[in-house]
Image (cartoon, one colour):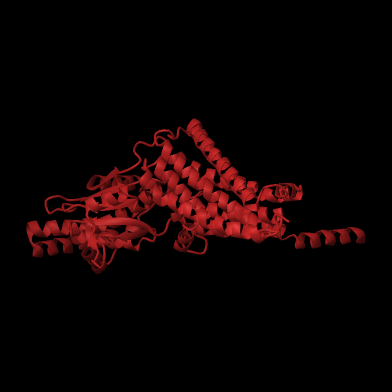
Length: 447
């Protein structure tokens, strides 16, 4: 038994000296658990999206609409935007429907709520509004739509009571209206056992006293109430982009998963430099008319070509499996794939340049690729994470690559419109590759 325990202790010592094994056993799971915990709202009060820009245009100016906008500002999922900045030192100006439509098509906003001048009217009982959206991410769009409807319908009773009171006062006068509400408060208090003053005060504020205490058995009444609200609250929905996309969910998700596998394969290809060194290939190459830079550039170009072929193959697989349209804007999709392959290859070369062993390179690759995939939006919408993690996610290759794929496949972007997304990736590739070449020239991988 003592011999067995000694051998067990030996295995623990060997394991503790293997930094890659220790990190893959503990560091990677802890990092992913933390990210998923943030997505599902562990220790931050609630799950779901946070800080999604919601453009709001209020052409009505009615107090009821002001109340509703204030409620939207309290919803943590939304960051209400009511103005747009101007060039230079000019002050921002209020948003208009025309500016919002232009902003959604340019991807500055994804969602907007427009209250027209006749959102409420003295001649009509009810509420009108428009919901403009660009559903580039299907999960995010469904979540935002549900939260928006929840907020609107939660505030609807108060808004409608204010509207009803205003219309009643206009027709029969303020004194008669006050007398009417006094009598109604008395009838409600006698029928349901509420205090008369509390009922009267809630009616003055435009709230429904005891609404939350309605018995669960009134399912039919609840359905009738919802149907009634649907009839008097007109929420017009208009999709401003992506109408031609046949498979919206797959169009977004295939690019994210393709990027994750691309980074794994290109990191492994770059790390193969260690195997070539171990096989003595470098010594034979460098003994001839071959310089270090020749070896590095050949590896870099090979990995770019491999990555480009892999991405194109995966997108055509998405076309066969899910009907993704990859041919109508294929030239710009190819540009996005090329810039993504260049950035991912530079990432793989960086790992090979800073790691001392192939095991260390593979360990760092696993940790960084899984983290970037989670935080860059490959697994779930970026808006589902806290705002500080959303900011960090924009520093990942995954984020910019997915935005480039989406611009090509979803919005049918032109070459000029693709430049912001692809240009960032090309800049990342240039900076990382320059550092990697510097490291290789002074490293020991060729020795």
